[in-house]
Image (cartoon, one colour):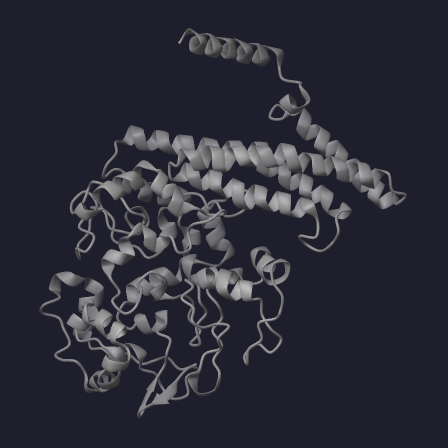
Amino acid sequence: MQLRVPILGGWIFSFLVVGPLFAESLLLPAISDATKECLKCHQASDPGIYQQWGESRHFRANVGCYECHKAIKGEPDAFEHFGQWIATIVSPKDCGQCHSHEVAEFSGSHHSKAARILGSLDNRLAEVVEGNSGFKTEGFPHGNSASAVSGCWQCHGSVIKVLDEGKLDPATWPNTGIGRINPDGSEGSCTACHMRHQFSTEQARNPDNCGKCHMGPDHPQKEIYYESKHGIAFLANKEKLNMARPKWVVGEDYFLAPTCATCHMSATKDQPVTHDVGMRISWNNRPAVSIRPEVSDGQMGLPGKNVSWEKRRDNMKNVCQSCHNNQWIDNFYTQYDALLDLYHEKFAKPGLELMTLAKPLLRPAEFSNKLDFTWYELWHHEGRRARHGVSMMGPDYTHWHGMYEVAKKFYAEFIPELQRLVEESKASKDPTKIGAATKLEEKLQFVLDSENHRWYENKMDPAEAERRKKAAEEFNARYKAN
């Protein structure tokens, strides 16, 4: 596959990569003749796009339509347009002609690999359980699920399919999913965060920018942020945060509140901007049992496999130190790790073991059993909410939307469904099922007899029961006195 050749000179490369401090002296000398030809039509036919571009730093650098959309004849998505070869999609490979450092960091991040969810358990829900194959297009005559096309793919990204004359299949375009797989082979979409055609720095730094994807029942980071003291401080002070300034160093250029970008991407006094949002995260809370980020990076073959979670945590602590002292920071991380330990040891690990033992007793199709949905929501929804809640200091999401819901689902739905499955299978005449049910029953009883769960069968340690009784009496006496 041919690469699109660099079309900007070294001076503009320096302007865009080194930064805005030299913007006035490092510009293309003028808007190119090719871009002027584009503007003759698009100024009238697309006035919104024209105006957005006119307010952008690209405009001030004389970087226009042709510089970004230029293509080479023979490329998968290239088409001839009034004598020029162009492409609709501007991919990270195109942006990398000038923003090479940023694209290299992004390409090594989990964000750029988000479309690899396609075919996963999550996508099976959208494609099969929720959907069907009724959305038929030229590129997909066998059909797709409209739920996946307009849901999962819009955040994670689709595999862009090119039709004749550079037209893009409507099942895959429009799409700005952050892991979009582009016709030139690159992964990702810069416009997932830097919305075209203004590419506003201020907009990219705004917490709501991340909220397109990071919200909802399974990963409500946006909601958690606005519940937290960080989000409260942002709403009270957002006009004072200098978010449109080119240089934006926490503790120097602003100090009243952090945004998502502050913690995960933006510069500190000791760290540059990073486009790999995993470099300051010390847990990957996506799976049923959280794993360290270098482990998940290794599974995906990403360069982050060589960066330890301790180093990443130090990177985040460096951000925190702009506003907090070391005792505050260290104690926060102690609280964070303790909540994950509770979730893992009490619910996630025994839950995984029980589901493994239950599998021979279930209908083989995924999500054709009540237990499949119960377990999936326990870790994928409630369990993630609790873990994300504590990681971002959102107490309501940690407790009521998180651990309370985990416990409720575990004791009121998961355990009773396992018990029903055991009883039903042991009553069958199938020796294989009876054997599997016996193993599940033994493990279930072992879990319920453990220190974490023995309260459920009224087997709490007498000394602990007495302490809790005394605490309840003191509580009742205190409030009766008032």
